[in-house]
Length: 470
Length: 99
Image (tube, rainbow over all chains, first blue to last red):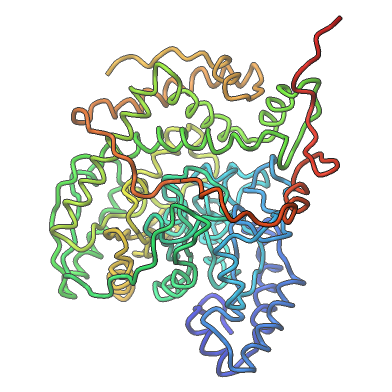
């Protein structure tokens, strides 16, 4: 089997046809990890023995004719989702030795299908970053060019799939943390509608934005994994009631917010995007220019709301209930020493920004104003979806950058410019590869982003397949 | 756009309960005002919008149908750095008055 080309859908057929066993498949991935991951570092920890055991159980299920979509499928899981008894660290020193007390709902669902867990993947410390460079365990390299970052924060989950070291994987997306690394490594990455996938057992970063979603080689595979993890969960009060996703395609009209794209996007990325648009036109799509005047504020709104929510969510890591605890004379010093030493630099910076924008005297001008502008962004989307079935744009303004290239925080934050609107509006979005651009004589992948209205994931999949095959 | 506000990083770190070195404080004194200046552009967005309560938000479940007492105690306590006799151990919180 050629792991660089194998899809989840194909593996399902092969497993059910007994072309190879789930154990063969898992062993093939474990070998690939052994060979390649020393250089790429997609994984923080690989679970060889338990993965083989899970594969054997999957083979028994397949033999008894009880296989489901993910039975025996080797997956990688971002290090911020809980698997009972396993370390889950969010790639942070503060949780380096933390063992999960229970399964996240998404994990429970995958276990129920007999999926195989290969290991936990690298990420930016506490999911704060766009390059995986802030990980306590050191950065992940981009399999497409190892001098460059894989994006982040779910960089390990993206690199595992792009490097043929997992058939598919799970990541989390608060402001592009699935779609941006998917674009930069040349795979598919999807952020579902806010509330569509339970966050029970996902370490909270910014609770009004976080969503779990799949990485895969194809849109079809993303669809399969999404179907497996979605659904109402009584343990997550922000999860949506169960409802069938609208299966009908409303139209083939897509919108491009031209004014928003005009600023800060590399010329060749725009050219690749235009090329895809013309291919879509030849497939019968109508492409409209649309006005979304408040999208320009997305990044600023995001970098107020996200740190604000993060600063409160991360208050739970205090050296008392979980993880690292540094000895000190008073309880107050236990908090400050543990948190100062346990969180990475970017995390400390964002906690301080969050603390500032929420502080008395500044909360009106920053936090409350940002929440108000967020409503304007949401309204821009609502209006756009009256005319079009999807809003499309490049996933990122440029291809993968070199390690250390964005050491200034603001230049790193600018990576998220096209990704944050979907999180702020709570709408689903997917990044599908749209070809390559060249940097230093190397072909680097870039992504085509499709954003649909709430709970219209089916639009993402149908347009996504057309982008893929164009 | 106004000048970025003066930020007292040390006071902020104290509020956030973060022990931060002097060198990092000096660095943050440059970085944080720049970031605040950038995000201040939200103030240029159209007027006031009535704040709405989001459709989906965290709520507490009703205080009913409890699970059996102690069912999860050990598992959850295991995550704590220090525990004893079913309780989390912390440094003394309230100090006794000196006689």
